[in-house]
Figure 1 (spheres, rainbow, N blue to C red):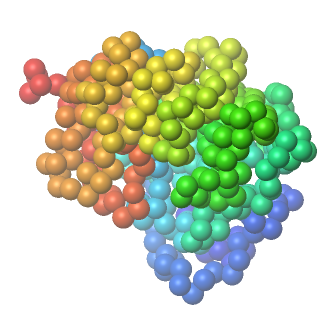
Figure 2 (figure 1 turned 90 degrees about the vertical axis):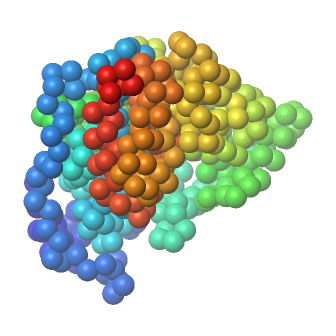
Length: 414
C-alpha cells in the first residue's frame, strides 16, 4: 500500500486529497463529526493473521468451484466480508463517506484486503457498490448517512429512459469510472501474491432499475411494480426499455472488471424479495440473462454466479439463468435447494448470517451441516452466508467459520 493507516487517519482533515482529481462534492469529506468513534490510536500492522492459502490449488479453488468443478475441499468467502464488523474497517468508515472510500483506489484496496489478511478466505472481493456504474448512464446517486443510497435522477416514463445515456462497450468505464481499473489491477496483484482469487461483482438489472425508479430503499417497491403492471397491460414500455438499457451496461461493466483482473463475477439481485415468481420470470430474469450472456460471449471461461436474495421461492426458475453457479439465501434448506436446482447446478451459500452470533460449536456445526447438505466437501459448492456479514458480528466468529470450512473433510473422515 502507498500509505499507512496511521498516516491516513492523521490526514483526515485533509481527506479531499484522497478524492480522485476533479471529484464531485460527494467525494470530499466534511469536517469530522464530534460523534465519530475515536480511532487516532488505532494501529493496523497489516500482518497476515491466518495460516490458510498455502496449497498450490488454493489460488484458483474458488474459480474452479464456481465453474462447477469438483474440488479438493469446499472453498469459502463471505458476502460483505469487507465490512463494519471489523475494527480495522471502522477506522475508515467512521471518518470517510462511502463513495470516497469506494472510489479512492488506495482506500478501496485496503478495505478489500483487511478481511483476507485476518481470515484467509478463498477470494478477495473488491470493496465497491452495486450502484457504482450508474453514472455511466447519467444516473446520479449519493450515499446519505442514516438513509443509504439516494438517487436523484428520475425515471418514470419512456422519455426519461430515452434521455439517459447508453453504454455499448467497455470504453465508458475507463472514462467515467477510472478508479475501477486501478483498484482491480492492484487487487489482482495482491490476490496472486496471497495465492487466492479475485472476485468482481455487479448489481443485476432489475435491482438497479428498481433502486433508480424508487429513488432509495423501498419497503414495497410500488412505483416499480406499477410500471411492471402497466407494461403487462401494454400501456408503456418504460420498464422493458430501462431494463434493457441497464442490462447492456451491466454486461459490459462485468466484462470491464474481468479485463481489469477479476476472475469470477457475482450478479447480485438484491431486491429479488420484491418479486413474485411471475414478475421475476417476466422482467428480472430476461434482463439478467441478457447481461450474463454478454459476459459469457466475451469471456466464456470466467465463471458467473447469480444470487437472488429473497428469491428462494422461485429457485426452479433460476436453473437456466446462463450462470455457472446459483447462490441461494438462508431461507431455504441447502438440501432442498440442491433438490430443486438439480444435481448439475453448482451452488453457493447459505448459512444464516445470525449463526455468527452463536457459539464456536454452533458455527462449526452450521458449516458442516451446510457442506454436507450440498453434497459433501468439494461437491461443486462454494460456502458462503445466505446474505452478508452483519454489523456487530464478533470478529472471531468469522474466523471460526472460515477455519472450519477449510478444515472439514466430510463425515466419512471425521
